[in-house]
Image (tube, rainbow, N blue to C red):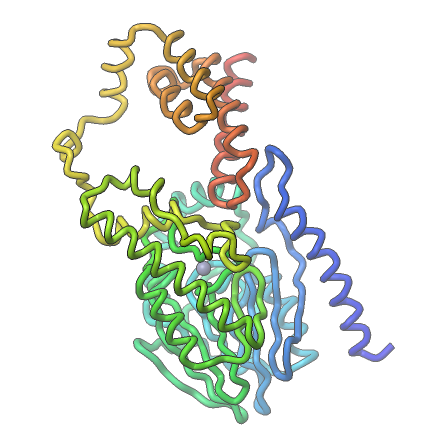
Amino acid sequence: MTKNDKTNKKDRERARKNQTARKSAAKPEKDKAIQVINFSDVLFEHPRADVHVARILISNASWVNTTDGAVVIDTLLTPSLGRTMLEQIRETSGPVKYIIYTHGHLDHVGGAPAFLEDSPRIIAHRYVTDRFEKYRILSEHRARIAAMQFNFTFQVEKGMSFVNPTKTYDESMTFSLGGKTFELYHARAETDDHTWIFVPEIKTAFVGDLIIAGFPNIGNPFKPTRFALPWARALEAVRDKEPEMLIAHGGHAVYEGAEVKELLDVTIEAIHSVHDQVVDAINKDMPVDEMIHIVKLPEHLKDHRYLRFLYSRPEFAVYNIYRWYHGYFDHNPAHLLPRPEREVNEEIFNLIGDKKRILKRSKDLLEQGKAQLALQVLDIVLKHNPTDVEALKLHLKILEILCEEDYCLMSRNTWVHFMERDKELLRQSEG
Ligand SMILES: [Zn+2]
């Protein structure tokens, strides 16, 4: 067996394992979270000469061979995953001369410590270092939201640290290495520090998380605003380059030929459509909690294979775009300087004066198929007494129903997180 055959066999084994893991992620069991991080294997793809991709479930990294060494684009989540990637680069490409961060999210920069022995130059947009600082000052909060979003307790791996770029840029920059040109462009999109790269000699675009498998992550209930309109414009600039191949650094990695344009066309149209509907609704003074039920993808896009709601969903995008353009005040004077919600709730609870009536109404709504409304009505009891056993049992049941048909990672995992919390509170109350 040649070294290459061995590598291919290893790749095939990894691919098989990955496919099994992906299947279980795509069809989670009834009450299970969609796990994307607790997965340490790396799948390698070599989609065209000089282009390599390393994939884990949550993100992808890639590298380009030049005659003078490798240019690495993103580094995966952890130093050990980065190490696995580096071993493959050693076999295929020689020393690492440059690393480009597409953005500062941990699943793109966390592997960087593994590459330092080659002393690569590390290039990123200048806002990446601000992002690292933000992660440091908000570490407790970020651990909490990671537990909800990914149902995951993140264990900091030995040697894990943010490796700052050695060179930053603002609007764009270009460098050449070993016969290839790397054009870097800044984009405000999923983050304010995004870089996408075009290599004209191989007509390939590397777009970071501008493209993930499915509806783009324009909105995340846990995170600051994403940039909808600049995102669409960045993808238009990618399309203007007429790439023959597009490498995405989230979800499905490799797009080729005609599918590149189709992918860009539908994603751009979807973002513009959702954005314009929100702008229109803001101009009509529509409250955001009505907006999220009205804004929809156009009919011809709603079941498109490139726009499935696997990670994010239009409702999250609506909140996000609204927050970008609109202050917190919803033009109801009761909400300008409100009393705490629990205080108002106590007034309502006492006026109703009968917990049983609230529970019954919540159950009736659930039976009518109005699980979300049932959840909000039930909240009147739980805000009054967060450990009411009867209310907790109903709460758990409603969350299970909301979870059952929900395959969007961020909402499903949130339901599961709070189902687990209900179960724990019930154990404590009943034990
Ligand atoms: Zn990202």
